[in-house]
Length: 476
Image (cartoon, rainbow, N blue to C red; front, side, top):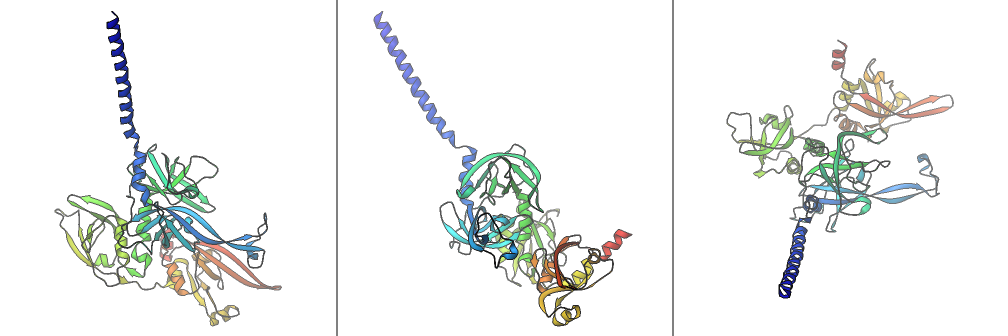
């Protein structure tokens, strides 16, 4: 009987030991599941996220608790100091093109980017869109023959409320910080500062703090779905991001050759698209009478290759266009999906010089006012002391847009949409950006003589571009 009990005891102990061993093995096996989707997204994307540091001069009072008005900037007790502003950025092309927020680098004299491995490089502003708070940087000293890590572009037109999202950035200077949360809402309109709104942004509860601005918001597949851009200081767990579809649309205009140089090509490109056996970049639109239009390329066509090279996306197309010279042949391979049996077509494009627009003509067309440089002769006509690098309104058509805004001959124009205009060339370049029905801000200086001397008034007036023809149609 004792022998049987002993055997049972031994068997029980062995079973217990085997159970413990099995439990330990199960725990070891479970450890392999620690690599969650968030971990995989971070591992896939973090090398393409950079720290962006911009340096700019700031003027501050040397007296604590008291700040002199800007008008005393030159003589008051102030000191100029170098201020560093930190943000984040996303590498969107392997040749060194980085997207960030415009406010991160606004006014920056020097820009430095730092990768996750600690490497630092100087960067330069390439293109900005203040209205969308977007900027593109380039790396003039990128390591030779090195293809930089890039984040894949996703879509933001199919986002789901409650969908998991991941943010990577440099909050408060802590580099490559990852946070996660869900999409709380889409299509939000937020006021970033007085008079400046961002429309249609993504709202998330993923923690986003100062320094995250310009960094990526990613979906669970590691695809870019937004650019983190703003936080509400009075609230917690509320962050916002510019949708990636908005980014792509704006990059098409920020990087297009016509915006960067005085050339004309005529192509506005969209997303990658696959039709049957063909995969390439869809043509969004073609400008009338442009080189692309003259070669027969049309909206909806799929561009397969440029100079024998396949395209990886819309940014890749414009990067390939950046260094093309005027008159240099550009070999295009494309297909037209609407053809009964789509076949590969060929075209040879060449950028052509774009002449300087006639700003005076555009001012007459849109605002019904005559504009001139303030030459000695014009200065004498309006009683100014002499010539000066500024523009002056010389005549206004009764009942026109300028007249309805109470502008007067002799008013001086110093800025158009925050851009300083000192001559007709600068004025013409700003007027070229204006289309029918656009709201345009003019900074006006009005100088009048009173019994006690000269009085100068400066103010901003907003005019809506409106040609006489369109005004007549509305009246009819």
